[in-house]
Image 1 (cartoon, rainbow, N blue to C red):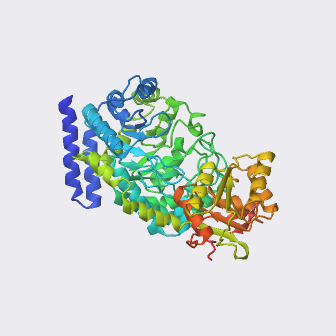
Image 2: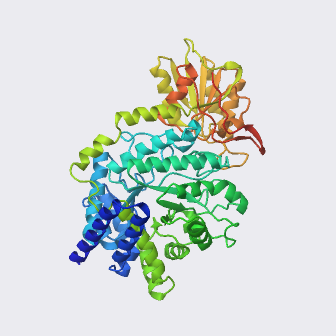
Image 3: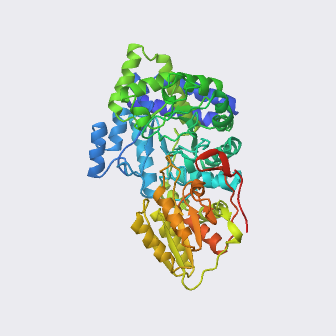
Length: 599
């Protein structure tokens, strides 16, 4: 067995060195031929293992805490990540900082974990792992920050209207991931966020213009490739027009085929043209594409008919997490794995019951429900990807822990991202030239619904010598709390109120308490600046507010720059990447795409 594993690794390593010097078409053919020869030497169980991208608990491949060991035993029946790899030989691992996995603590530790996992996988099968993470930046960031460079996120990048800024942002992300031994990023989001009530995409999208999103997706792909990692475009065929969160239900996209072609599909076509490595399917039903209403992940018409055949994508098709309810509510682990594979998916991400799902696929192939050729086609693609990305060679090498520590959070990375974030701040409303504001002796009251934003805004004003009172109003302030904030406002020259996601989830009652706070402050005739620290749509709930800034996130850099704009240290330059509709009448536009004021 050992000699066979060594032969597998040796063949693929030689193929990678050979194909690296060849033209792209010839290289791809060579990779595919080598992968085919590797597949011919694998057992059925080994092939099925390659289909799965799993999570493992712990910060080391070989030694973990008792809590991590208990979690691994509950999931897989063994204690350490290395033992999991030996038992199931998965094709990939995805890192998390929550969910109990606790994989991500520091650059040195992450690099050590990556190296250990690769050594354990090669020892078990002769095959390397795809090691991945959801590092989108902004709202979805897994890497420990600091020291990792905090990125502004996609909608903030969209507000810069600068593809070069997006490319640089993602290049930094890619370089930091690569230094830690992570081989693939499940980013960027390619969804076009045309629904202000979208509870799961929102600021994770570059915006509402299909053309702009397409351009930014291509910039992100170039940036991550420059940084040294593979790229995933998600969530196919487009998750941008829904008010249902696929983590908790199955959204239905009601776009016609012509609307899909005009709105949702252009960024994915652009991603394919830019050489994206992976495309992640969405757990959404799209009647115009498949009238059976199964999730796109489980639909042969969507995965094979549209993505593989019509769009011509020949890279890896991976599922969104199979443990979220958009998939698991209708498809239990065994059925989900078999159905997604039959639809044309290559890799199954986060099956909620790996032993059951693995056994189900093995049984489906043995019984003929899944053909051997269908299985082999996916495994060939997976191994071709690993050859093409050089994963059969020594990924990290000597001194890898020191290198990870040097690369992650480099000063030049930090300064570049601070400048990019500054270019995203959008002044949406500034009646009568209210900004910039110079505060007097009584100072500033900072309040609002986002406790992190309130704290960071207050710290930013304090650092500039202002007398600051900070009152966290909470997400749903009651009448007594609102009265307390209004009373405090009477003693301030300026009130800065942070709002957060008032439109998310839809319905006329969304954000009622937060809106009540803002309106009470406006009625008090106090100088009020509203800062929307999540999606930029909040202004449509109080359109009479005289000043409104959008930051697209509650990161420290974004909020510090908002303060700079408020006090006149730096002018605003961002422009809306989405349109803001009139509340209650989405056919009417309050502020159009591209709107942004200067002073």
